[in-house]
Image (cartoon, rainbow, N blue to C red; front, side, top):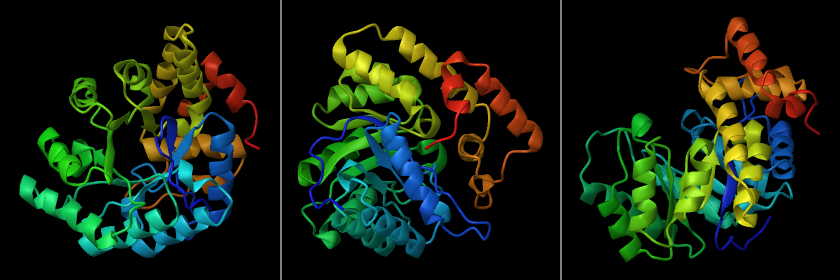
Length: 312
């Protein structure tokens, strides 16, 4: 465990899948193994307990168990931005406190999303209460803008209020809207604010615009391609080819339910059928979908090295 947060997370972060037992409990051993594999195969950091990790289908106890598991595993928590969002203020405070105490680089926080069309004052009050109640100077919040699922957007005016009031605590944002113009505008409007794209499809554009990188579901299986883009960008090498290869893999994955599809691919990589377990209401891919997804990925030259061997 690290008690020292990373000063500036950047690059390729995987929105980490949560492996489950057949009884749909968190399966700690493959979680640790997958996180280690991700860091060895292209990820600069990890983002557990997000949408891809089915966090909103997990109890607070289960989320706290995952944080403790990762913090005591020897994995570098200062390379983690862990999900802490919740509709309930007390739950958000409890999870965010655990994230900060574990030495994570950040806490990724959805807005409270059950009550629709909340006022900006109400949203500001929620995040302010979390920060004040946690009361830990190590807490670094990355706001989570995902209006398609949350229906509650993170607006520029809300960002400005939070940054002005809590400049040491509110440090970045993940934009999963899929709207590149929104991401680009935020990067331009808030220099120094760490804006991550929620899809690796926008990784190169994000970096060129001055953003922090990507926190993406696809990085569970294509981080090596994303890292090639990042390294090409940093070195000044040709970037369009690597980004096209990365985008091609992402577009195949997007043709299927993302959590189920990614678990299907990880199951194929590891040879572990338990990776197919998923919490309702999400369901595993059908046999037809599974065969089609793996066939389409294996047809991509850039994915053949990965799908031809098991994860170590």
